Amino acid sequence: MVEHLAGSPLVTNFLLLGSTLQDLSTNTSLATKNALPIVGNVTSGMVLGRMLDLIETDYLLLVAPGECVEFSRGAIERMCSVAEDSGAGMIYCDFVDWNGTESKHHPLVDYQFGSVRDTFNFGPVVLISTRAAKDALNVHGSLAENLKWGALYDLRLKLSIASRILRLPEPLYTRIESDGALSSQFDYVDPIQRDYQVEMEAIAAEHLKRIGVWLAPRFAAIEREDGNFPVRASVVIPVRNRARTIAEAVKSALSQETSFSFNVIVVDNHSSDGTSGILEHLSENHDRLIHIKPRAEDLGIGGCWNEAIYSSHCGEIAVQLDSDDLYKDRHTLAKIAAKFEEGTYAMVIGSYTIVNFDLEEIPPGLIDHREWTRENGRNNALRINGLGAPRAFYVPILRRFGFPNTSYGEDYAVGLRIGREYEIGRIYESIYYARRWEGNSDAALDAFTANRYDSYKDWLRTVEMEARRRINAA
Picture 1 (cartoon, rainbow, N blue to C red):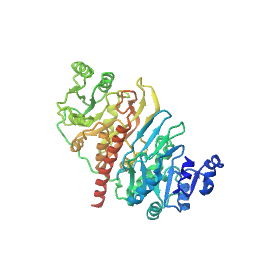
Picture 2: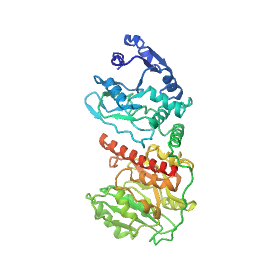
Picture 3: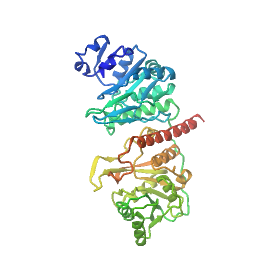
Picture 4: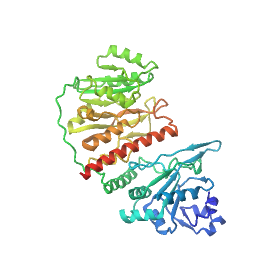
């Protein structure tokens, strides 16, 4: 990789991070390329800031730590040419994965206004315009030297305000897979580390303030309605072909012990594997179980939720339970209802424990989203990819919005929309078991599906951010 880069007439300098220079000290190709060692990590504010101060070239080509790539003929020239033609502040491109026996095209997704998540995958190579980077830092503030993980994230967000971040939809290099290689750009920190999350949240919050999207902790009031609800709460379970798990899920919901009335609404989305027969048998023995078979055949999970919440069977509170998950014990529903009584919440989200099919805890275990705060939770929701589980909704407000008819991100969309106006309550103890097994709908996603999901969530963020900016500008 170094030999190839050193041989390019466009490359005039090397910045070698960490101990890389020792490994390449005998490389004669570097002798004429002004190789400069820098101790530290490119995600550090001090290190990245020093790099930008040293650079006198038009562009900075970054190759992520731990990665080895082979550039196609003319690849660097192509990236620089597109950067010049488009005036983009940052360029990234598709690539090819090589695992030693076969190659596979690895497409990425286009960057949007709402692509503010810190996990956005740019691949292992990015090209940054030095002038655009320095201009952005001059206008929006330099990189804080105390940043440990977020320097590139901070730079990217500041760059995006006045410059394009552009995907080049051409595979310009091959990524050589190895034990030390990384799954995505600079993704070598554990995202569940509290210090990491705090740093990333602070960077995102400042960005949202700069672009007029950040919302202060002022929430719309909720006047409880004396609606004609048949029960206080409904557990909603959309299902399609889950014969192996649906009975356990339904029994978990039916076993809840409460001081109020509730039912369990299962929306059976044209199952063909025996799920329908199991539900019919259960409904014969449990009056609380409502088995809905929608007429429409084009429903996603969101569409199934709409069948439940707009039905005459739905209670004042609608509580999520996936068809292969379980409530942790008999008190989950009661704890959720009690949380609604504590404040004027339009939505309540609990915490869950990840388990295998046999309900044995597996890493990372408890997911409690303790980063959520009343002051910044709904803003930080734009940075992260999900809001947690189980999710519960005050139905009179939920019916204002409904769910998008998708099978991915439908819950995230509603959470963002509700959070724009109303306060969301949190339960930080585990009240839910989320199973991870081969039957999960998000298990072993191919690149095309994963990209479609990521693009959709970025689109949801884009729409939500535009709406919040309009509110602040009014």
